Length: 134
Length: 385
Image (cartoon, rainbow over all chains, first blue to last red; front, top):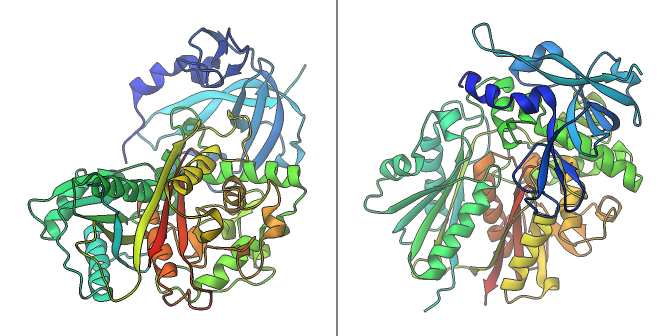
């Protein structure tokens, strides 16, 4: 299989490093990832915004079987996180014992290593979430 | 004149880890099975459609339909490949229906084929995970199993079920697959087998996921000029296809699949059958929760009631489901699966082995989707009496 692409993740930098999302000026809903039209009402009358990275865990799972690029991080806690700006994202939760994660837990964004593409490929960083320190 | 598409024949190989066979070898074997099952068919397709999800990755082959037609010694035919992730198989069958119905083709051979086990499990998981939106969810390594686990927890919590309640599905799938000649997993589970089954993504265990296996299945869809007349003639009476927002957590309800509902309703509306004449359904159960959500999305039962409504004889409100063993135990070679499903409905309507214990069925359908209802396809078959 191919190695991770450098241009692809350079293109996605606003999304994977800054949580860029869209806000619909017609229906008032937010969504992630950004797209050209609101997925709820179809309007093109949208703003591109950046999240402050604070949210709440709505649901979570502890995953024990990942593909090769993520195996150093197993088990991985994935949370369905609702950001304060109103959109959801499925992302890893770190700095916490998997048994201590719970629904309703406040979390905040943190920049972490996400995956390593073998010994000669990219080392990718991105936004994960940790228990809120505020 | 508008033609009525007929399923003229079906053949397949048993799904397994076929280390000694390529995708072409598997396709050849499935065609041999079709020819041995339907000896009086004049197999002269003018069109070949190959459904396969990952031939580039797993077989390092693009243009697979042309290569396959060549190795099957079919020259001068139209060749197409249809790809719609895990739902490629039924998408291909629906395209064959369209070609016959339009009169463009008189006989179309649909081959669903997938080599899944060419690499170690972590590589297979990487390839399978490409059905996710790979720029975003794929970036974090969210696997389809992790997504299914999140949806299972939401479903269980909303409707008050325990993991042990959900375990009914894999238990019953394993039981019924033991007599299916095409099934990969032919062993029964015990009431407590889940306890020793490794957790893939909490709460789902290995028993809640389809097994990785290779397979090929084929059907001939014709305008009636090529058909096995020794037994019941089976027509494709209706098809449906619908898409949804790919990420279930962006949808208004993540544990109800609108694409499944819409494709099901389209196929039923198109067919000249009553809803209560549909007595057999092959549904897409790649992960345990998806079986229950699919049954509810098709309207077989009200939301949240499928777990308690499913009987041990695999009926739900009078409709049989997945007597084949489903994706869970018959197997799920990705792009081939929809063709296996149509084959099972075909066998059920003809009252073949595996289906002899149930009353004769007039109409049945297959439902095949990509991910948790991102796209869903339905193919409805009925007997021509």
